[in-house]
Image (cartoon, rainbow, N blue to C red; front, side, top):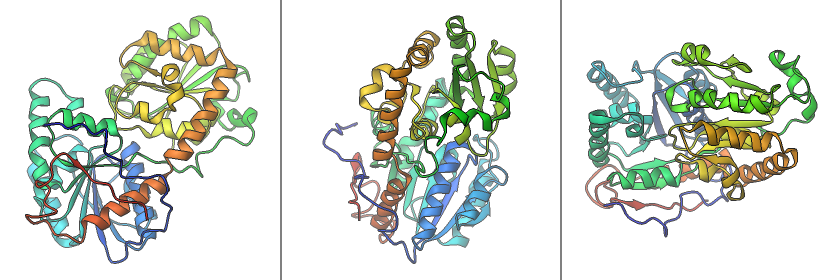
Length: 416
């Protein structure tokens, strides 16, 4: 049964620093699908930190996308694992292929990212290697009807082969517990590179670096949304909200940064004042050019884009999904967190910030301080490393470290 987690501390303490915990001699195999977007960035950040701490890091992922090159640049060995994003008839072959990778690599620890890797990886390893599963948002939130029930049954059953379920927010952990996923939990909030994502040195010139905004008036309001163009990210709701914004602020521009399966439909539905910027290798210039950033997701674990934007001192309007309230400063939840799927509250929150420069600036400064205090990637990576050192010395066997022994227990690993 789900338990009350109020007396349980998250894995991170906020005091760890890069380089404090060595991982010499440890072989870590990360398995990831998807290979773009937030999941890829999280894996790439972990790879870089773990390789720097002495681990042998191997990443198995489908070819193409951002993850393979980024992981290689970070010091990992990259192994091609052909796998589709969604489960289907190719799953048995994907499981067999991944089992061969596991045998060839001989990892001390297996870290599975997102639902597809979590499915194939746990079927391939079956708990014979200490296994960390990181949902990056629960798969049952993405589907409905009989499919959702089947997915939930799998997540409940698969904990027998999972030494830790690693959540990126307390809300994500609590959702799993409410849905009957009995696991040994760990929580490490997402972190971002606060040295890279920073406020612009010259705010007035930030838009000049982007040709598509160069002709826009200096006082024209700009709202930016960064994310894959897909149902999860809710850009369709944002497009329905946008006419209410431009009715009051006709010069306002909305920029959708990203690509995905919904692009053609969204372009067809877009009202005036919307720019589709496509994929950006680095979204930093877009955050710095924005007055407000928006994340209208239908579900998340803890989205990276709001954290990146807040590190640039930009206020973020986010929908009230898992991780949102933990991402936004407590003082700004009423101002910046709105119900998912509802255009009117979304438009109202955007207008409150766009029409009140003083409130917008103050919220941006609070956002910057919050991210620097709670979501630095070095702290997150150190906490995951501490989790590894607690798990890797113990092989998967019945006993003290068996994943089935301590369901619904959250494990705290002190910062080192």
